[in-house]
Length: 443
Image 1 (cartoon, one colour):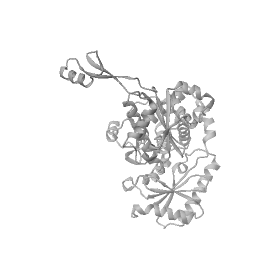
Image 2 (tube, rainbow, N blue to C red):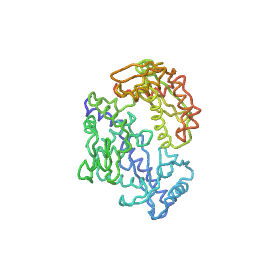
Image 3 (cartoon, rainbow, N blue to C red):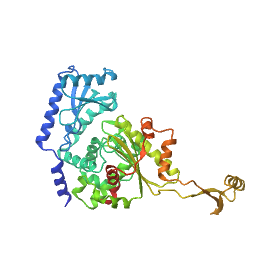
Image 4 (tube, helix red, strand yellow):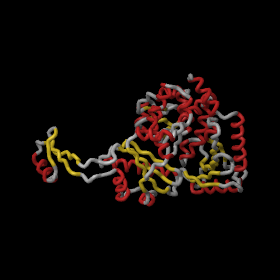
């Protein structure tokens, strides 16, 4: 199937119909009208996000509605304004408090996610008092720049990223945001052009649509870029791509290359895990271990920030013991959190070599010999080496030891972690998630 045929087939599945677009805008307008009736006349209510920009995917229209207040309003009053407006305008609808830089309200009962976000009304970025204040400017910029045909290119990119767990700016994913997708299409023109460039990206590099900086060197110096910098067209001091992890970027490059090598609509579909092949998958991998504990009651951004730190700390601890850690994976089902680790070794050898000083360093050789009196000593490439006996160390015991002795466990996780345990059998959904992530080179 050629690229144009793939594009046509995929868009048929992911592009909302005109009726769906009109329906979403109508729902948004009804919500906005009711909110306006509860607010002072100098407050404004605006639709932002993908629905406002016409880049949302079929059956995934979430409404981001901003209540804009004058900059004279105190910041600690913002949430109360939105909460009261929601209760007055929609007394029968359930609501939930969510958190970003400051709290906002998520309304239920509309058949879609509806977020009511407080922000300051600003015309210029210099007026902003919080990060969310940029959102209305983002919507205005995209609507003023994007061509109708480019909206479909954004949809293709979003779908492609979603199917490979690369979409979403939340800490859990550390992927591409919707706004970043739109800016990339403005830069490259088409989804396919982006993939052709992405498969051979050489870091660091930058994208500066508004040419705020005289050269790429100036951009890289300003942001101390390690990989990619996408300068925000409405705020020259912000990198839109800063949340995207190296792992996500590299995975995107690999999947882009795989697609271009053998184009298929399957890249825009969620791959299913074939449970019948579990044994075959396991044979391809080394030793898999999983540790599970109860899910703490904290917001996702804090949870996943602490989980990532924990994962890196465990890997370092095990690596320092001489285990060869191939990868790790974090999973949550809402009730339990699981850390899956793949190690080349199940058990470390009884003997451990300890590298000593060079033979020319007489004083330190004597000190080394005294420190390893019971060890077997030999020379290797001009250095003295001691072979010590090591207490047999299994992977399971090492993990247990880590959680037992580690004093600096993440604050929100420590209590639950100490009550956690190694799983006798790794759960299917954990394996599925891990194999999905690792399968990038077997497209």
